[in-house]
Length: 440
Image (cartoon, rainbow, N blue to C red):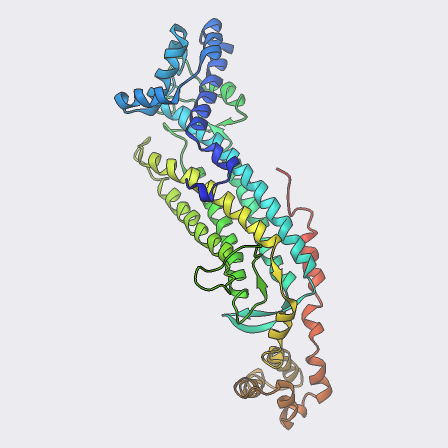
C-alpha cells in the first residue's frame, strides 16, 4: 500500500498486526466453541484465552525456518501459552483461519466503503439540488446535442452510485461466511464438526459456508472486487466528466483551488484538474484488481495457493484505493466551482441548432415524410453551423417549411422551457425514492 493514497482507518485493517489479530480472533472463537461443546478441557481453553499473545518479530523469525506463516504464528502462540497450547489450532487447517479471517477484514473494509458512498451520495445530491434548474448543453460524442440541466447531469451519477451501493451491499452479504471444516472441508478431525463450526462462527457474526473444499470458493471474493471495480468506474466516469467540463474552451466547472496551491512548476497561470485525474488513475488500478479476482476463482482440485499471493496484494490495495478515491471525489464535488454563465454562453454557440429535432417533429406532424423532413431541417442546420448564422432565421426564410409550420410555431419551438419541463419529475424519481438508500 502507498501512504499517499491511504487513509488511516482503512489502512489499519491491513497492517501485519491486524492480520495476526484477525487470525487470533478466529482461533480463539474455535477454542471457546470447542470448550463449550466439551471437545477440549475448559481449563486449557481458559489458559489459552489468557495467554495467547504473539510477537510479530518472533513469528517472522520462526517463519524463516518453517516457510509457513500460519505454522510460525501457531508456534509463537504455543511458546507463550505452554502445555495447554496443544489445544490451540486443534484440528484446523490453515485455510480455516486464513479464509475466515480474510472475510472478517473484507467485511470491515467494505463497510467503510459503504460509509464513503453514503457521504459521496450526499455531496452529489446537494450539488444536484442546487443546480437542478441550471441550464447546460448536453453533449453526445463530445458534440452539442440538446440542453439539459447541470443538476440532471449530476443525477445520472447519483443513480449510478446508488446502484453500486446496493451491489456492494449484496457482495458483502456473500462474505458473511467462514469455515472450520478441516483439510478438504469434510470435518475429518474428531475435534471439529458442523456443530462446532456453527458455534465458533456465530461468535464472529459469521455463518458457515454451505460447502468448502479446503477453502471458501473464490467466486464470492470475485463478486466483492467486481463491486469495487464498478464503484471505481463510476467515480472515474464522474471525474472524466469534470475534466472535460473544466477545459479552458468549456470552463463550465473548475476544481477547488486552495490558497497557495500551484498548478504547474513552469506556468503560474495553470489550474489543472489534478484531483479528477488522480481519481481516474486510481480507478484503473481498482478495475484491474477486479479482473485478477476473477482469475483467482479457478484453482486446482480442492485448492492450490496461486490465489494467495494475489489476495495479499489486491485485498488491501483495492479497498484502500477505493476508500481514498471516494473520499477525494467527495471533496471534489463539495468544493466544485460551477460556472452557470459559461454554461449559458456555451448554450448559445450553435445559434439554436439544438432545436432541430422538434422542428423535424413539427414537419412530420404537418404531413411531411420523416425522410423529407430530416433532409430539409438538416440542410438549414448545416448551413447555420458552417456559416455561423441563426438557425431560426434560416428556417423562417424557407417557404417550404413555413407553408407547413408557421413562423409563430417555429418561434414557440425555440422556447427553451420544453427542455426542462420534466426536471422535477426525474428528480423525484432519483432523490425521493424511499428505496434509494437502504440501511445496512
